[in-house]
Length: 435
Image (cartoon, rainbow, N blue to C red; front, side, top):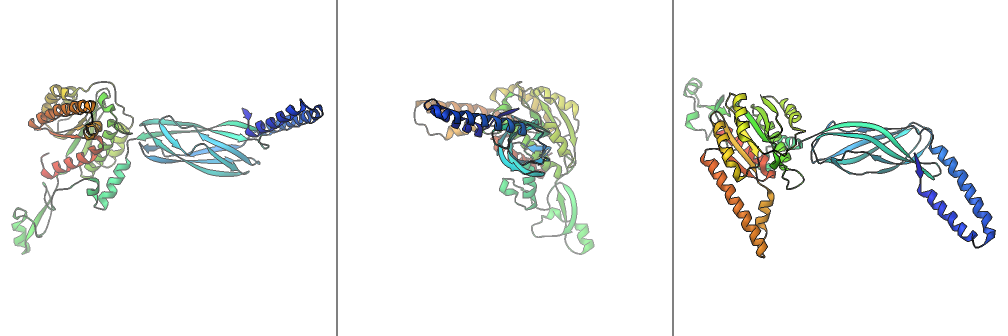
């Protein structure tokens, strides 16, 4: 398919200008007809030249998996296998679930050469996406026509939760700068639950750490050093119900939850624990607890295409299913978006889980609630909104007070703070040895 280019319209406008004068002075009419004839001849020749086989190829270089909400670069290599130079505009047909900067691209491409192009994409939805083809507007040699070419360059990409945070955590841990992320390790060196090694006494060691038999044998004071218990099990219960669709910024509460699960899974696996996952409320998936860093890929493949549904959470059902599926004691982390009316269904479910497991309930609070309370009350409508928000938060607090009385560890945090708070509570549980 060929379409007129800008130069053809400019020339036609000039000929129309001559035609206007030809309508006034008949002597100009011969110049108008001659110009029209010449334009027709050159336009036909130019159309024939641009319609010949173009010899263009496009190769797209993009990672097979990308993190959600992070800018990534797509590389295109355009080959010109013909003997002709080209001027062209290129547009890559990207999926609707990404935002793009840097398209379309205008370039000149000499004969028998190639050009490397780049543009940025920003994924806004998890799951599997497809890049179909690349569209090129090829300018004819005289510039009168553009040929619209579609070149196949199919690519399939998986959009995962933001695993870039895992790399950031690993880097911080290597540099001993986890406090910059808000993660605090409270345990003193040498204290824990599992015996690690014997070492020479150091100032600050408690008397109960001293191994008197070893000290007598070595004729110097020897202390026992302990570490946090290993080979424990962590199971995430992920609510996929309609409340997880709430969104305060670019990411929904559900996406923040997946990011937190990935980060805490990485931390737990590094600690030598096993990690498992179960989903409920419309999406039912079960991954039994396993250990080893290779489990991270399995977790990613399990959750990358999960989406919140329109169903309400059924806490009793998932609690019953987990008690049947898993017999060994584990730290069960239930992540949801709690409402005060959930107490009647939630409390029996948590009490059932506590018969065998240690339970941590993490609920995400809408950032909009905190934002409303920060707005100065300037009129009657502001007072009504502020009062209603305070009333709602009071009922929410009563629900969490009830959970506390039932000896359930609970969190009520904004989605952005979920990852750090979960890690801190996990490390605290490990340090105290209550699992």
